[in-house]
Length: 314
Length: 244
Image 1 (cartoon, rainbow over the protein chains, first blue to last red):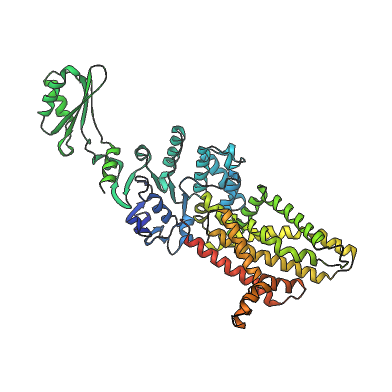
Image 2 (tube, rainbow over the protein chains, first blue to last red):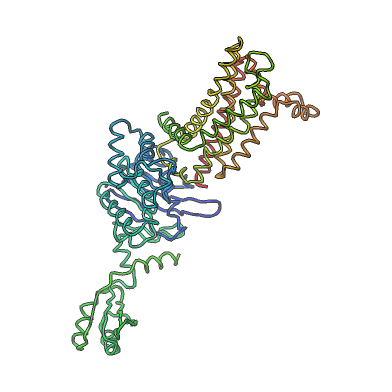
């Protein structure tokens, strides 16, 4: 087992408010963990404790076997961390900032130069290296923040909302980068963007009011959706009643919901009983009843629906 | 120690890439000139020494040093870079010491730039250079203790103006504790021990001793202890208030 990051009973209280409530999980090499939750759920607080910025009220995190509460420097050496909002020294240039980070991380001479230029080319900030960070666009600032985090090629990368506030192209680039680095690292990203979970994460933990409410692959989460394995089809409005009757008669279909679509067409969604796969039966029944279907597809499940249910139920 | 120096270098560069350093040095030297020559009558008194300059130094420092110290931590807190800094492999001691050292070096550079006065005094007369060196040392130590206090106050807030005002006020209290004004307020009712204790905390008493050319190890220890105590207090505050 390659358990590089292990979190045990991590708890943080601010006065009487419990921001993070006894969370435990571990992450293995090669995993990209998405830390999901609504704003204020405790994502940032949890990440700040793992990175050694905040001291846990109780519990701890182990990074490569080092306890963050007793050996914070060892942990910080192994982690690359992008704080929320990517705060940077705005009067420095990226080149000066990366030189400073290298100094603090104990790199010098040729290694230092090489490390900085590798990180800069990886993140694609070479052409702004000598411009004051305060004058850069939000996208570049974020990239400089990521460059700073990956500079020393850490085993564990913790990125707090790495794509927040970026345009779709920049988001795509950051996600591509995360995927590239994923193979030999542990990457933890926090986000409230659900499409990000689908595109980059191999595992997702949903946290609400400081507690873990779900932990699994994105597909596992989707499977918790009511819509999982539901069948959606589109057909002429004139045939809708007949079609509804036909579909309702199929064994395994729980209920049928219709909704308007444009140009005299109508959408029908058939929800299965307890996640059964009904698309074959539904399409066979429709064919037998000689109903023309424009479009038919099985649903994977909707993360946003699962997310809303998990994070509001608690 | 290496990380402390990395932080000091970054801080020093920050002083000189913003107008802060130049504004500070120009104002410091100008005020030094005004106080030493105009109020202190450095030429008129017909003595080859730098007493007029060093006599006013504690009062100049009262306003100028908190202006250097106020940004030390408050700025990092406000910009959120404290999180960046404190998640690097840097111990709290190294961070606190590195920042303090940069500010102290900077204050030292400003103080050293008064050297033309020293040259002038030597050109015009025959001063006791031992006393002058002792005075520079005293001034430098005093700057260090003011900075340690100002840095401590700065670590408690994210507002630089508050850090400046409270820093200056605390330093003022430390200065005043040796003056007759404060002493007489205590003398009426407090035992001599307390009066002496209050007096022993005065910057001016220890500074005056050094500036007179009497380098007593106890005066040095006083300033070094003030620096040590306030750096330690800064470490405690930085550790406790990281997330706030």
